[in-house]
Each structure stands twice: as C-alpha cells, then as structure tokens.
Length: 251
Image (cartoon, helix red, strand yellow):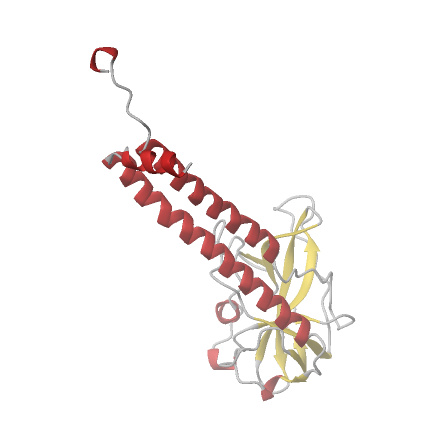
C-alpha cells in the first residue's frame, strides 16, 4: 500500500485551473466552518447570561450605567405609558402566526424615557388592518429585563411602513423611536428597550426566544464545512495524481 501511494504521488501533475479552484474554495470552506464554531460559542454564552440574570433581583433603572453590559439585567421603575405613540415591531412570528412586538415609550418618574416592549400581538386580518392596542392608564410599576440588540439588524422592507399611529417599524432603535415620538432631548432616552416581566401592567404575550439557532446546529454546520474541505482536498489529490492514460501507439 505504501509503495502504491508513493507511486501515485510521483504521478503528481500541476493543473493551474484545478489548483486555483482549490486555493479559492479551501480557505472559504475552512473560514465558514470556524465561523460557525464561533457562532455556536456565542450562543452558549448568550444563553448562559440569560439563565444567570433571570434570577437576579431587579434593580432601579437609574442605578445602571448604559456603557456597561446590561443584556437581560432585571430592572424596575415607575412611570406613565405614552399611549399615543405606539410602535409595532414588524416580522415577529409566534407559532407560525405573523404579528408584531408592541413597543411603547414610558415616561419614568426619574425623567428618563424608556422604550418598553409589552410583548407579542397577532397581526390581524391583513397588514392594512393594524391590531388594536389596549392602553395602560395611570402610573404603573414597571418590571422587566433589558434587551440590547445582538448583531446587525436585518431590514426586510421600508424602515417605517406606517404614517401616523400606531407606527410599524422594521428595527428596534430606542433613540430614533423616541425621536419619532417627539422626544426632543435625546439625553433623556434610555438606549435599550425593556421587556416586561410576567404579570407586569400592560404585558401581552411574552415570546422572546433567546437564540434563533441552537449551538448544536452551528456545530453541525461547521462539521459539514470541514467535511467539504476534506473532500475537496481528497479530490484535488486524486485528480492531480491520477495516472495519465497514453494512446496505444505511445504505450
């Protein structure tokens, strides 16, 4: 077997087209495999952060530094809902049913403007018929968890689809949304949204998956890319060392 392998290697012929194709595809396949592994590790870290912070005692909103990592920190504050400026975060599906996440500015007692995510609501008969959002009146005690956007948000259509209120938006940007709601002083705006806790005043359907793809699936995709890279290397060696078949008159 060793002699056969050595003889096969001696037949190596450089094919610039095949070599160029392999040189282009091999790094791409390997980089995609390692990228999937990194994404899997990020999902594990995110899930661990979520699990750990769900059991923390809520702290006052004003005690937090927005420059720090506040993902899923439990907070509490009192304030009034601005029911005249309701945002519907588009393209949110629950159990296969299209709908929106309802985002409402809350004027906190400390003077901060907080974009509160009340939860999911079904779309309704059509996109032209927006759902009716029940108002939350009076001063309420808000408790929930901070959500910071993970990665770059994908915009499927126009960033703002509806003129007037409620306003359909494609991305969750608290500062810009507060500006659309007429908040002149952006320094008042808390830079992240707060997702309502269970039984909090105004809460709707709480449906916020922590991760969209499991770490195991990322690792599975990584293995597929690595196997494709291995197959590419094997094919390159096979065709580069394949014995040349000569015409009968040359044998």
